[in-house]
Figure 1: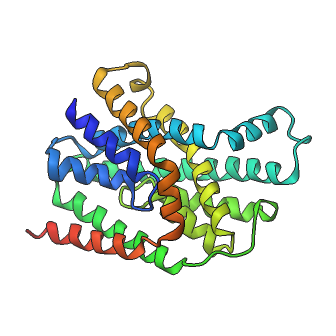
Figure 2: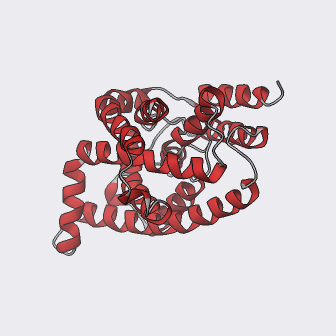
Figure 3: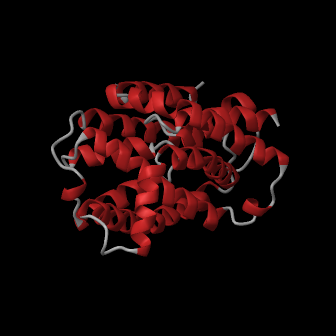
Length: 265
């Protein structure tokens, strides 16, 4: 029970920062909790915890979500920006879902004999954290583009980018925001669009990977999801402001290097 509470706190806070909440959860299970779960089990648990921050983001971005849902019923009656975002989210979710499942399947097959405490898994997370950090440093500044400038190629690029975030250590928000900035989108819009992208992919991912768990309602899992929701809702406004003003690239690189060093000890 306490393990789920701790992991829920980590998910609720780390989700809004470009530091890979999934990677943080796996590292916490290895470093502090020594759970001994397999890589696949840990990934599914991390994905399940994302439901807590999914509902937190759903509440925080409720106006945007409501507008997009109205677009489902009356697509042609919506303004150009809403239609562009809707098409972008549909395309990017489809691509990232297919790519993410393929990558996860490949990694799970490779790591099926390892626990999250395996030095190979920890080393992989460290390397991916370093990669995330370098991309964040490269994408320092935004541009001028907004929702009206969204094109099909943006959906393809961001779908591929978000697909790679299925790997623990690659920060989903870090990768997608950086990609949007490199595509010359405005920083505020990039951050908002990145978290709108998280909603359909988290829901779809849990339906595919955690179908049974969605209906089990075990007390332990509910504690984790509930804690992630409470801490996520309490911190989202502040931490999104922090993420907007601070480039976490150097921090993520240093943390990735320390993670790699830990595998040698």
